[in-house]
Each structure stands twice: as structure tokens, then as C-alpha cells.
Length: 266
Image 1 (cartoon, helix red, strand yellow):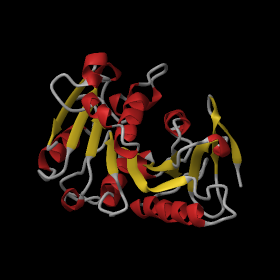
Image 2 (cartoon, rainbow, N blue to C red; image 1 turned 60 degrees about the vertical axis):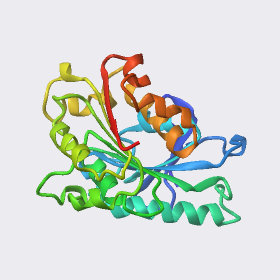
Image 3 (cartoon, rainbow, N blue to C red; image 1 turned 90 degrees about the vertical axis):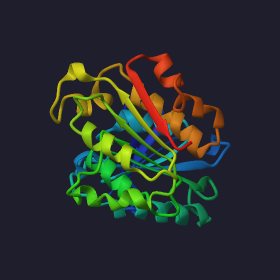
Image 4 (cartoon, one colour; image 1 turned 90 degrees about the horizontal axis):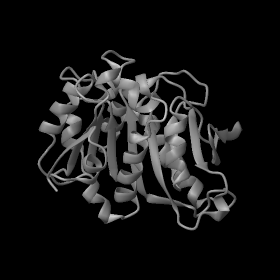
């Protein structure tokens, strides 16, 4: 097992587990002090290839709020990933929660599962979102191409969604903006949906411009803040958080004018 405190957050441990190869686990360091069971957050890596530590600060912030976060790929592993790896992580978490000699024994809420990812990893999340164990889907800087197949996702995956879904982009300079815009327009009317944009247009276009800025701009925690609000709403039953995402004067855009948020089907 590889283990160690994650970047800038001593309350979170980043580790690998031999029972779940090709994944990285972010968890509260002191599991015994966690009073409520940990919901599960699964993460598809950017490019469907980046290592499990690529988004350490973002994922550590989520884990510090008492979530079990599992990212595709080992901590320093560069390997092409699939949406099936997200589902493998659900299987592992369910098994660990029921195994008496596991440190996670009866500490995981296996009924509360989010699949998320960035760019190509967001496509993996959308593809995995049809699994009936999933509670919500979040696609960051991502959207399905008309030609399909990147990240395993096709437009048919929108028809398989059965939970609330959110797309988060970095404004019109985000290279995934057009695809997310179409996904949001095309998602079935029975699916509660949000499309949120934090405008990083000043970072420019291209792969390493606005597209990645929400995760790698120093002192910018807008994405992590929105993620925790959404996950608390979806996985911890904080119903009041709907006000952050739904309505003309939703909390995100009121608190920071760089946010613009659209919603439908609520």
C-alpha cells in the first residue's frame, strides 16, 4: 500500500489499496472520528489518462468534508482509463463496507454515490451514470461529442441518466463549452439538470486555458466550493442547497458574479 497525507491537507490521506488496483483513494485520515457514514465520490481523470494525484487539491477538499473519494489511476500512474473503472470502485467500496476486518467496515454509505470527472473523465462519468447505484453525475469541462465514443460516451448515455446531473464549465473559452451546452439542451425532460459556468475566459482557449483553469488557478476554490455544495445537496440530504443552483437568483451567481447558472426540470 502507498499512503501519505495529501497536498496541503493533513486531514486527508491519499493512498492506494491492493484490493483496488489502478485507483487512488482520498479519505479522512482519522476514520474513527467520522460520525456519519461516508458517501462515495468517484472521479474520472482528465484525458482519461492522468494520474490519480492530478487533481489532488480539489479532491482532497471534497474528502475533507467527510467523503470517500476514489479516482481512476494510481497516484503517479499514467494509464488509459475506462468508465468501468468507476463502477469497479463502487464494487470495492460495497465489499469493504461489509468486510469486518476492513478499516471501512460499516463506515461507507453505499446508497449515496456520485460519479464525476473532468474533460474526458467527465465523459466517463456520463457513461457510467446509467448505473442504478449512482445518485448523481457531475461532468466538469465536459460534454458528449456528436460522433461519440470518447470516454466511452455517446448521446444515448443522456437517455440512460436517471439522477440529477450537473455540467460545470469555465465559460465560452472552455473547449468543452459547446458540447456541454448541447448536452444540457438535449438531456431528457425528466432529469433535473444544472449547467453552471465560472468564467475563466481571461485564461484563453485551448486545452490549458480556461478548460483547466478551474482546477489549477492559484487561490481559486470556486470549483471545489461548488462541488461540496452540490454533493452535500445530493448525497447528504442538505435540501436547502438547491437554492445555490436553481432559480434566477441562485446562491452561486449571487455570491460571485463570475458564476452563471442555468437549471431545468426541478
